[in-house]
Length: 237
Ligand code: PGA
Figure (cartoon, rainbow, N blue to C red):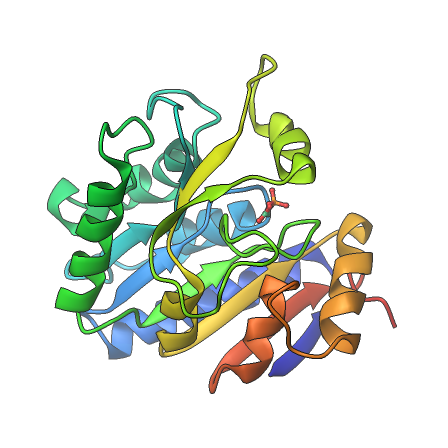
């Protein structure tokens, strides 16, 4: 695992954005799985500001996860957190974007659809995610098998309560639908980003604990091309 500390959230985001831009210029048909949440916001804005016409014409985006039961139009939905700052301003056409439908009647079929889409693309080129306070990646909560593809997860209390920060009104969050840790491990490049001192403890755990399923982000340590990029506020050292 490549661990890198950047002085500020801005330099961290600039590095992540530049990495993605260089990758898509060399691999124009890349498939990229991106996370919602606050962490990648500035990365998204920087990508949009620095993209050249044509950079993303053939790229496919896959939304990492969604809260079950939340409408896509809800500004707190995972979809909105990716659509508004990244997909819409880049002008990505709808057939090259996939989001989980958190309102799907058949959630298992929804998982299958995303599994098949990722498989049809030959797997993910880049998966770029934040990290939860409990070490989750996407909505892969502690205890999730590293061998799991897309699935429905039961949210831990901490995820449901921290998740309130995305919503204007109190919103019950009990389940998620998410790309799996096996997708993460099979991606050509896996990037985990963290900023702010609220993430110091969980970054310390990732650095110090052995690889185990109780700490989903520890999967990064067995990824053959895994990167943990943090700002100095999130760096426990
Ligand atoms: P955040 O969420 O980027 O809003 O901190 C990360 C996560 O919970 O996975």
